[in-house]
Picture 1 (tube, rainbow, N blue to C red):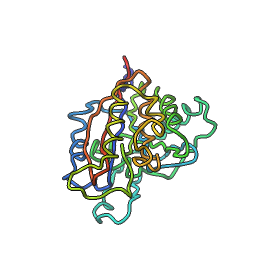
Picture 2 (picture 1 turned 180 degrees about the vertical axis):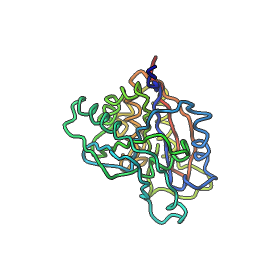
Picture 3 (picture 1 turned 45 degrees about the horizontal axis):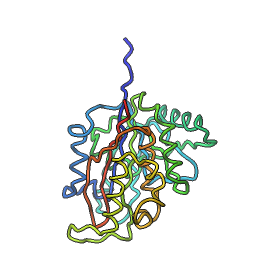
Picture 4 (picture 1 turned 45 degrees about the vertical axis):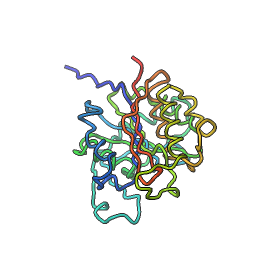
Length: 270
């Protein structure tokens, strides 16, 4: 009997916030991700494709490895964070398929990285969501010198993966201005709140074109994202779900006054 590949109706954008998400039990986002399988997404995917804001390249690149190393791409944090491991299997077949789909969409070049493991934008949330580290994971890079529409179209090209049992996750931050972080005793600065609310309204109302052109459409866009690397994973998840998909806010919390953990689920139209 041939077992059919699971079909994934959903794609996700996760705000992974600070690397301390890996150890800090006071963060609501940590508990949200730990409850993933019980409260958000009960299906077990065949493999996972993560688009992380921490891998930024001139051309799209996939990591094509048998076993993922854990990359500690953060500095000056508690020692125990550098001992955490997430040894998920690689997904070289998925990497090949991603490359094939992107080239078929008209891209002239997609690179294969045969050494790179998972950066903390991938392994920190996955460690909380799928702690067993037994699901194969492939990473795809962002191209921060391109725009939102480009990344939305990357997602559109990858949509067939959902019918092949692949869970597509964009991992970034709904607001990401590291120079503006500060302890405000739980208060949120107005510009961050305004951008975050605009994003929620635009997504929930299906105004994906506005989100693709967020630099012109959103209030305080340049303040919320001085560099767009952590925002473009959202566009990939959105594009992969399709233009008539429905967005849902699945988590909302803040850290250090302006770092939003807003996370979204995109469900394809049936």
